[in-house]
Length: 239
Image 1 (cartoon, rainbow, N blue to C red):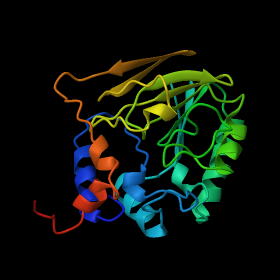
Image 2 (image 1 turned 90 degrees about the horizontal axis):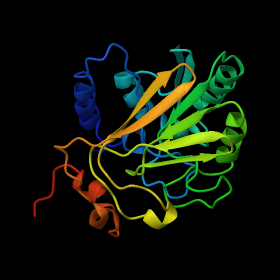
Image 3 (image 1 turned 45 degrees about the vertical axis):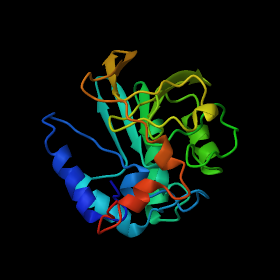
Image 4 (image 1 turned 180 degrees about the vertical axis):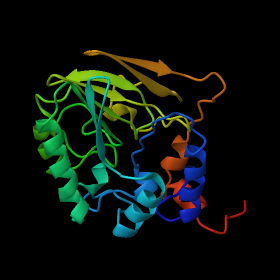
C-alpha cells in the first residue's frame, strides 16, 4: 500500500472502507496515506497539497471534532504540523476551539505517537512527532484531555503521563519488531483496540482476531531502502 504515490491504492482503500456498515465512521490519515510532514528529517515521502487532496477527496476531512455519549472526540492530522500548508493553522485553530468549548471529557485520536517515553525525548526515526510542534501540541492538550489514542508503530502500549492516558493501537496488517528498544514494554501483535465509554468511564480492550497471523516485516524495513517502497513501484518487479 503506497497511497502518496498511487491513487489506485487509495481507491482500493476507499472500497474497503465502504464495506464497513457502521452508521458513523470517521477516518484519519497515516503516513502511508498522505506522506510525512516535510518538517520531519526522516520522511521518505512527504505530505503535499496534492497527496492531501487525493486522500480528502476519498475519505473526507483529515481532522475533525464531534460530540458523542457525553464526550468530545478530536481527530488530528499530525503531518500537517510543520508542513507550512494553510491547513496547518486551520487545524490548530480547530483544536484550540474544540478544547476551549468542550463541556465534558475529551479524547484525541492521531496516527503517530506524540512521544515514546517522555515528552522531552529526542526524535527517533519516524516513530515520534518532531519538535517544536510536539511541545506546542502537548501544551495545548495538558490538563484538558483524558486520553490520546495513536497507532503507527504496529505495537500495543498503554501508559499514563502528565494526567493523560496514552493508548497505542496495534495494526491488523503486520507486526514490526524493530524499534522495540525505543519503547520498552510494548506488546507486538496484530489486532485493534476497542474503546468503550460509559459516562466518565473509559475502557480499552485489546482485540486479537484468531484468524490473523502475526507476520513480522522486520527484515523488509531494515534494508537499505524500505522494501515496501521498492515493491510498490509499477510495474511490479519480478523475482
